[in-house]
Length: 83
View (cartoon, rainbow, N blue to C red):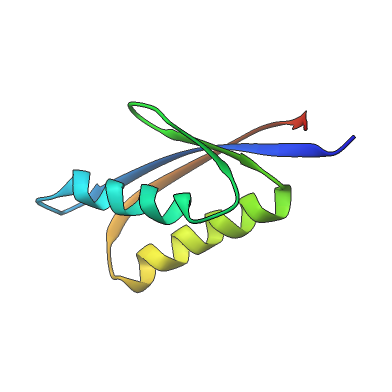
């Protein structure tokens, strides 16, 4: 039986007048990937194949860094679950 990886993401834009827009942009970026997305008040949970989750976390970090944003990006990995 294949396992899925679950990650809880919290993205906090720093030094911006429009933090909600930055978070919304990130959510739209995540939605373009092959993961299940559950948006909560303070964080977003994504669930998918392990390689996809880890690649997406790296992509998010790299994209925000390229754009020159200042941010905090918390990633919490939960135990794998059966598909």
